Length: 162
Image 1: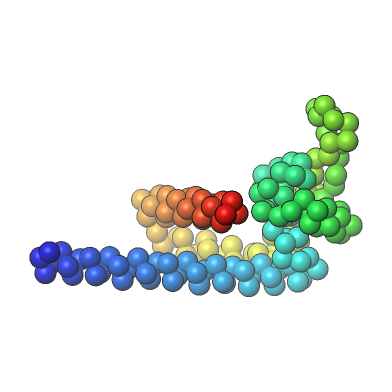
Image 2: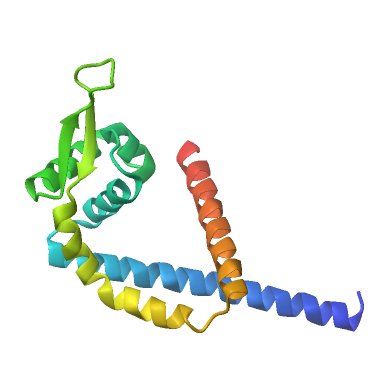
């Protein structure tokens, strides 16, 4: 390997490690932010995660929420009970289901403002940060983040199946 290629390989390894370290730090910071938001809303971390899944992906069955969250269905029952008692979600009979006992879980929009307000500082900082990037930069970032998310989903599925 030529000296230039060797330097390039070292530089790429260093940058790749910096990206991985930054992603871990970002993950930690977002976990801390989510924990603070959850504490203000009197929600456990898993409750806030499930509420977010229901809010972002629309009405779904409790088992679908459990699958997306990677939680046992029995655990999901307790989470959904707490969210319903807190006025965050509603459980409705699924009129399209063949099983009359089938339920769909839906987020109640009137509580969304509370969540958005608590994430307002982060959203403002993100808007300021992203304003400094070109359209092409943003496309690259979207691609990177989507591919990183997919890699995380694959790694999680692999661990869950092991």
